[in-house]
View 1 (cartoon, helix red, strand yellow):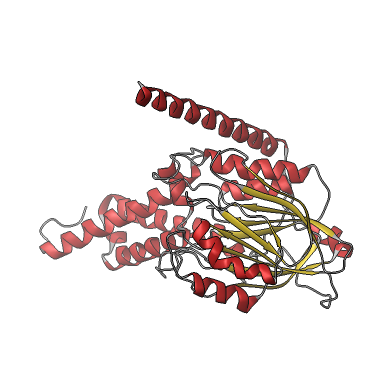
View 2: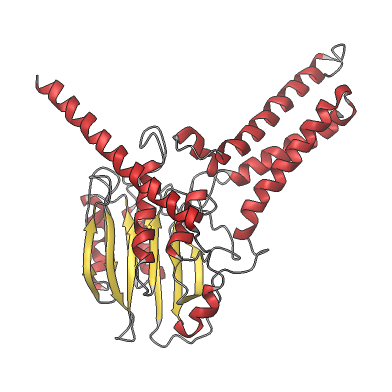
Length: 385
């Protein structure tokens, strides 16, 4: 313990730094639990911020000379903070240029086997439709998916249909609507409700400009683990893994993109990649944090593109602010199946335990949805009586 005869401001400093140190350690340890409660899973997101807090308290502890305190508790706390920093950095570093790229750089000219995509969460209540449209027209990708889109947003973005005539829209007023625009031909375009009866997802095939190559495309926007949305991450995880299991069964070039409401370094995202065999273009390139657009110190990557080993990256970037709480994200891919076997070596491999966990999470997701439907039906019955 610090000297209780020290000046009051010194004692207050010790107390504040101790409180912040405990917060950093708890925020590091909670995600290690495989519990799905929202108040646990939310700590998957701010790893960079936790590193900053842990480093700040570590430095403050050294200034306050915790290492000289009796009974070694001060040294123990400093060591624990240092370990938390190291652990968090191990999770983050793969998504920086310090790591090797999981998906290679394009080596082919743009000869009809390139594909560009943009994902934009518009924020349903954002009314800067002209800005969003201008940004999408500026970058002019082949494929556009806009989420949190209602009928008002459909009218704002409808001019895109002049250049992107292949569409598959599901505007909703519950913040889970989606709009899909394609310059390239599509086939079997369907909007499906995999778990939630109010959360759609996009399932289609898109033909590359070469006129002969078809790729499978999934657009997702599951609910986040948050008290106003979902009390657990169960259904979000299950939706991702349902798609992952479907991809696993089919050997074809595949792209999954959307606002996943999950960070790339979470256990579920990693499990999804192992199950599906898809790879993350962010690995080795940078975080490209897309949320929260209004707060530069509170950002993490929520909007993603995952690709099969058939693809390499020509360009990836975060786009300009459009009034939403998300930045749009853009990627240009090169279809290079001749290097698929080399790229596949970089893909994460699932083991038997992964498959068992995925099956259990999917089962829990359907069970939670059934329970919620029964609860909703009961509430309606009570209101009716």
